[in-house]
Image 1: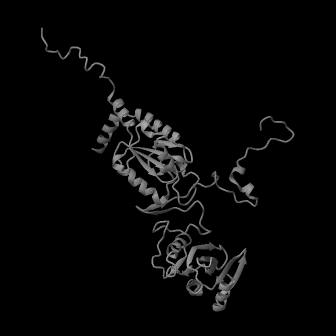
Image 2: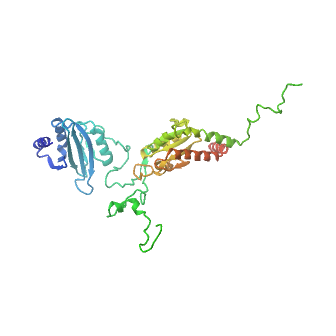
Image 3: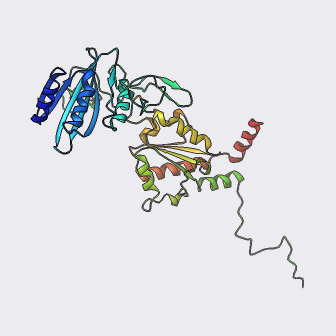
Amino acid sequence: MEAAVTKLEAQFKDAILEKNEFRGETSLTVKTDRAHEIAKYCRDALGFDYFIDLTTIDHFETEPRWEVVYELYSMAAGLHLRLKYRLLEGEPEAPTVSDLWPTANWHEREAYDMMGIRFKNHPDLRRILMWEGYPHFPLRKDFPLEGLPSDVPDVAFTDVAPLQGGPFVTAPTDGTTQVREPRARYLPPLPPKDKFVAEP
Amino acid sequence: MSNVTSPLAYDSKVEGNVIFTRLDAAINWMRGNSLWPMPMGLACCAIELMAASSARFDISRFGAEVMRFSPRQSDVMIVAGTVTYKMAYAVKRIWDQMPEPKWCIAMGACASSGGMYRSYAVLQGIDHLLPVDVYISGCPPRPEALLDGLMKLQHKIMGEHAIADQRKKYVEAA
């Protein structure tokens, strides 16, 4: 792993912003406009032939807001590399890597569908889970869990789910998970300690 | 001695094979005991639905074994599973293609109320789109629960006014 990272650092000294090693996993944060170039180098020169996954993070209320994460794997060497880059809130436009790994096509469509990140030069950037015309991006932090109403005639509609006090809804408190956990809120009140109750 | 049988005379071939009933009751009995389900399997409830139609639970004991994958040949839609908003109009469209008289069973928590999916993506009960006759609780319900729901539907059908309802429909259409 060190060899590959050293090569990468030598080749793209000015493009790698941050390097993080944690429990044997290497994560590199790179410049957005160099990301495609670096990904291509990883595939061609370093042998990262398997594009495991693409994920996105919404750093809500911080700038740059969006973060895109590539999980790369080398089948031959058994190496796992993580590449990240950030995008500003106003223009969530990322370079596509679907020309390098065909599987990235659908991963990027999902990221667009759920997070609203647009991938430049993507061959077919349509929604993949929600339908065309759905106006929201459901995995964004400012999207409410219960959803927002929408209507695309003859295709689909959405409504707001009744969430308040629902059986599976955690309450926003400062307490631990045990306090927030829904069932904890509906426990019957405990009997007073000085009074004996056969069956509380 | 004449061998011509009078039409009013006792006929041992007919006796015992004739019953008197109301037409409504006869039609309801026939409808209720040969329900052809449209298996609208959308999630894990569909597995229980399949179990209900297999040897151990044997839904054919109640005359509902003829699962039809064409809505035009079925008269009870068993909505078994989570109805997402993306699927909602498709279910509605299949329902609209089923010929009258037709009934709907909402099988399981999701089809009845959205279940544990209080979410932006899931319809909060198929009764937002279709008239549901029987709701079955459970997540998923066991096959016995489905059979119980089916029997409840049969009881419901037995109480319907088949002829009057049909005539009313024609009068309203005219």
